[in-house]
Image (cartoon, rainbow, N blue to C red; front, side, top):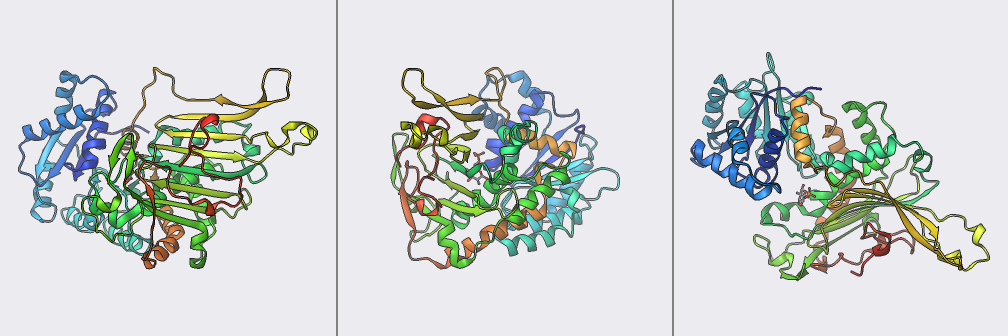
Length: 498
Ligand code: BG6
């Protein structure tokens, strides 16, 4: 698919996401020569800024974010793509004046609207864009990128969907989950489906359990209002981590075409065994960070953060156990967890294989010492794929150690690409395979809703963990004593003390 020139209209352009992700991603795409000629980025903002002021703001965003040296000349070329439209989203004049601005010949008539705004405003903003005929695709395409959260639970996601489907067809909607744009996440598909030796092992006969851990050392980062009404389960698990789980466990799609891929992901979500409310405590755990030390610095607890009510029960850590009731995975526990203010920021998928039968070593001291095989997928910061196997230590004794076959996919001279770069480009190409279809969102809410509903009622006690630790003691989730959270990509540092 070819990227076509377009006007990206960014709502919420002065906000956090735009600063740290969108503008740097547009800039990198331009530097890489990937933005088609004529592509413009039109920011909508409530502040009465001039074009020059907006350009200097974007320059600042890019200089703060990029790792490579900043080149004035390249930025000057990029700045020609930048435009600013002053207007208040809550006022209908904002949309009529936007419609006249977009009439100017400088703007391509293919338009992608990027809604980086509060979900509460989605309906209103779309209604007004639609009233000004800006979604009309009679001669050119119109697409809408919607940032998460898509709803607050199953019911609110459905009502949001009903509202936006008044204005848009499903083909026009790009529900973004930026985890699907990450390099290793896409590599999971290649790793699984382009390597024939893995497929026979990728099932309940050989795999003991799967873990997905996303930990962050940062806290809520000035987003108190949003985070307190969301919490870790909604913010990360319902979206990003369930998406990772679908990619690791789905059946091979018939093609890499968007619908084929999404069909397989939905099948996984549909096969997840529902958690009855009375079983929530055996399947999920929540906690809040207390004051502690992160990277040598003393930090506040969650309840002391700005905009957090002193009696908040919002979880900053959430873990859960799921079962996928299909032929491939029946009986294999899937453990997922995420937390803020943990010891280290990283996302890893750990696949633990069963013990070998061991008869061969029956009479040797090895019997209990042989470790299991793991496949480790490092999503970030380290992007890697490692297969751990047991080998004999050199020497006279029959001793073993774990060795790691490293299939890291980036050479040192190959640059990492931010997930948003890939996804912003896919919108220009009209490729929706890495965006969510509504039924994926629906089924994901169905999985977590019973947990959220139970937690919402139980308001008396929320466990805490010291900031800078590996989280609370939630080993009750594990099916077997030998199962525990893996915290390291390397075999020697498998688990670190909490
Ligand atoms: C966002 C969440 O969707 O993902 C944040 O709202 C979280 O709370 C972020 O920090 C993590 O994304 P990444 O790409 O930094 O791992």
